[in-house]
Image (spheres, rainbow, N blue to C red):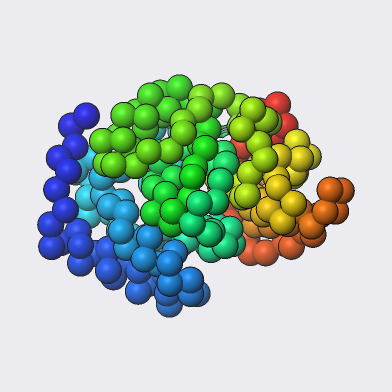
Length: 218
Ligand code: SAM
C-alpha cells in the first residue's frame, strides 16, 4: 500500500467545503454530515489524485468499479435513519468508504463484496484506519442469511429489481435502501418491513450505479 496517511490543512479544508456542498444539495441530517466530515476520503485515493478526493464525484477504484460520489453516499445513509448499534448489511463494500460512514454513525456493519481483489485490499485498509466492520467475500445479492435479521440493508450497486431474499432478512421495522432500474439509470428505492408479510415501498430520485451482479441480480 503506497498511500501515506496524512491529513493536513488542505484535506481538512476540502472536507469542510464538501460538507457544506452536500448541505446545499439537500442533505440535512447533522449526524450524516458529521460522519462525512470525519471520514478521510483521500485515504481511498492514490496520492496523485488527492486533489479529486473531496469533489462530489465518483472515481475509479479498479476492477471496473467506483467509489460512489459523496452526495450518493450521504443520500443513501440518510435514508437508513441509523441509530447507534443498528445492525446493518452493506452489499458492495468496494473500497469501503461508505462502510466507514456507517461505522462513524455507530452501526455494527456486515459488508460483502464479490470482487476478490477489492475485498483483499479493503480488508487491509479499513482496520489500518481504525474501522472494523465484519467483512465477507461473495454474492451479496442473496444477502447473508447466517447473520440475519438486520435493522437496515444498503445496496450500493444498481439492481434490476428488489431481491425478495433481502426483504426476508430485514427485521420488522427494518429499512432496505437499493437503487433499482436498468443498466443506464436507477431510482433509489426504500422498502420498510412493516409486518411479517407487509412492506411499504417508496421510489425516490434517479442515480447511476455500477450493476449489482449475482444470483438475485444481473
Ligand atoms: N460502497 C462503495 C463506496 O463506498 O464507494 C462503492 C461501491 S461500488 C459503487 C459497488 C460495489 O458493489 C462494487 O465494488 C461491486 O464489485 C460490488 N458488487 C456488485 N455486485 C455485487 C454482489 N452481488 N455482491 C457483493 N458486491 C457486489
